[in-house]
Each structure stands twice: as C-alpha cells, then as structure tokens.
Image 1 (cartoon, rainbow, N blue to C red):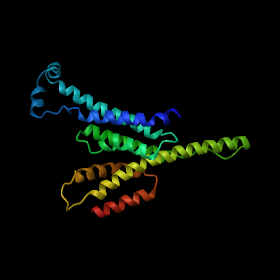
Image 2: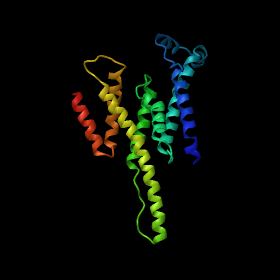
Image 3: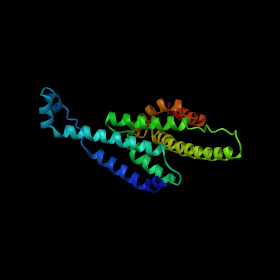
Image 4: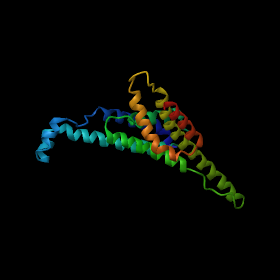
Length: 214
C-alpha cells in the first residue's frame, strides 16, 4: 500500500534525475583526449574535470534505469497504467536511442530483463487440498496472476515503443526526427528480445512489420 501511494513521487524523482543525467557532459573530447592519454592519469583527471563528470553522468543514468526496471517489475495493485507508462517512457524508452553506447546498451538490457521476467511470470499454485488450503491457494493464484498481468503490461510498453519506431520510419521521408536511427536501435533490441516473447501474436506482428520494411 505504501509503494502504491508513493509510486507517483518515486516516478517523478527518477524521471527528474534521468533528465538531469542527460544534461551532464559525456566526457568525449576528440583530439584533446588523444593528447591527454599520453599524460599520467592523475594529470588527466586534474586537467579535465568534465571527464569524471561525464563518466559519473553515464553511471548515474545506468543506475537509474536499473532502479526503474525493478520498480516496473514490482508495480503494486492500484497504480494506473498511465503512471506506469510515464515511468517507462521517461526513464528507459528515452535511452533506447542515446548517443552513449554504454547507456544505450544498459537501456536495452533493462528492456530485456522486463521481457524475460514477464514471460516467465506464471502461476505455480496448485489446486489440491482441503477447503482452507484451496481458499489460500485461490488467493495466492489471484495475487500471482495480478503480478503477471502488470509485468506483461510493462513488457507491452516495450513492444508498443518498438512498433511505433517501425511505423514512423519512412524510407522516402528522409531523416525526420531521427526516425532511421530509432528504427535501427529498435530492430537491434528486437533481435534479442523477440525469442523471449511469450505471445506468438507479438512475433507475428513484428515479423509482418519487418516484411513491410524489406
């Protein structure tokens, strides 16, 4: 009950810190960095403080995505689908096409975790026993089924994001809003995630989408 009550506040904090982390410098400096590699490590750190802040920003974003993933997988009963979607799009989906490879791969890893956990969340409660045991089993099954539905809803947000990236791409429309890069990132994620999809309909939908792209 406490988590359900504070879910909105936690979501806002995570999305705020993600937005803050994205504004931090990446620490990439081209030729400058090549020259500084020849110096001793302590001199590099002292002469280029942005390098440390860039690494810190990347680590912050990766950790925030891990926390967001855990929160998405334990969404309590009573939290609206709109709040769940806000958390997903504001912390994980927004990083799928990030320019920093480590951050982007971390986002894909978080998405894979959601897909795998959602696919493996099945009820293991039996039906045998006396009335009291059966009643307890029914309650447990209802609880497990609720968790499974909420995890599948989180996974559905991923599928919808990837489907939107495929539908927005136009081969004759040029580079509009990074649609081609978004498509590439979505396809790379799907190549690893689709084998874990728990619904044949999902694999069929994306198979048809790939045929259209071809």
